[in-house]
Structure formats: C-alpha cells, structure tokens
Length: 278
Image 1 (tube, rainbow, N blue to C red):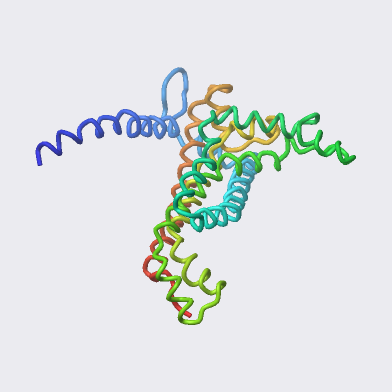
Image 2 (image 1 turned 135 degrees about the vertical axis):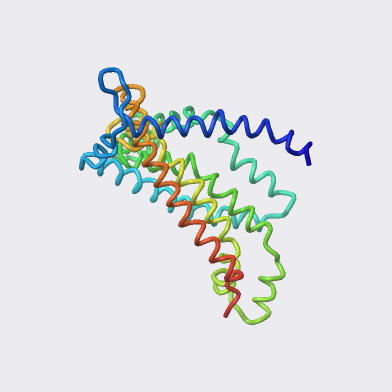
C-alpha cells in the first residue's frame, strides 16, 4: 500500500503544479481588479461580462461549436460504422488513413485551407475549369465551421468506432431473428448501444470547438470573434488578465454544464440497457 502511495506522488505533484495552482490563479485574477498597483477583490470583471456586446461573442461561439459538433456527428457516425463493417485486417489501415492528417501540425492543416478556399485557391481554380464563377468562402462563418469540422472530426469518429467495435454481434443477429428490419436494428440496438461513444465524441468535439481561436483567426480573417479569440486578445493584446480570467471561468462553466448534461444522458442510456425493445 505504501509503495502505491509513493508512486502516486509524482502525479499529485504534476497535477498540483500544472492544474490546481494555475486554476487557482485564474480564479483569483477573475475576482480581482488592479487599483494603484494593488489587487482588490471585486465582481467588476463578471459585471463587464454582462455587457450586451459580449453576448454576440458567446452566442456565435456556442452556435458554431454546436453546429460543428452536429455536422461531425452526422458525418462521423457513418464513417465509424463503415469502418467497423470492414474486414478486421483492414480496420487498422482505415483508421490510420483517417487520423493521418492529425500527425501534421494543427496550424499547418488550417493554413492549408486558406490555399484551398482563397480567391485564387484550388477550389476556385477547379470551378473555373468548368466555367463556374468564383465563390467567396474564405473569411466567413462557413470557412470557420469547415475548419472546425475538418480538425475535430477524428475526435468524433474514434470514440464511436470504439463503441461499435466492442458491440456484441449476437445482439444484432438476435434482433434480426426476432423479425426486426435493418432500420429497427439500428434504432433499437446499434445506436443505443453506441451512445457512450456518441456522447464522448460530442464532448471531445464541442470542448475544443468552443475554445478555439486559431481557426477563427486564420479562416475568419479576424472578422468573427469567438470566446477563444476574446480570451487570447485580453491576455496578449489588451493585457487585461483579470477580465480574460473571468471569461475563461465563464467558458469553463459552460463546458462543465455541457459535460454534466452529456453525462446524464450517458447514465440514462446505461440504465435503459441499450433500448432492446421492439
């Protein structure tokens, strides 16, 4: 028992140094303001958050993050399902090909889309070959959404693939033996049993999507400020660490609430036993 306790010390120290202490500092800064070089406890930073000008930032961030999560789910679930239906010998290769772009730097992947979506980019060059007028996608909400989906789609596919690959095939076979058609098998057996992976995927996509600032900066051209942009601006440009910390705490609360909701749905799906009812 003592040996296990000793082995846990490095993890405790690591968590304290890089998780607990930074979080305490962020909370401290969020509840203080600087007056004459002194830190004074105040709710001014959170009162400033109530300014209507920031509501648009919150709404745009949550809307784009929610839309990107929904698109990732709609696209990612069929991809994960197709991979699980492939021969076992080929599944590893398919997963490898799918996550291969993630081996490249995040910023480089995002910069690549500027080349594709630009006025004289690959997309417009391709359309021009067929006599189609150039389209202006870069520096729009659509470009930001596309960048989010492209970068975060693997985070949706992998947990869903894991849930589907662990599913007992005998359950779907039994459902068919009982007279269920393909749609009923999917809606009553396959999808309910894969809900833990779906919920994990939603959480893993929504969290980075709502906090990103690089994608909106590069593909949005700085025209559309998101929560991540607001925080980054307060710390690096404005130098108002107190207000930036308050925004960070607000964003953490939003993420924790979304995680709690997702966890509740996951618990309910486990209690229902996968919904094996016809």
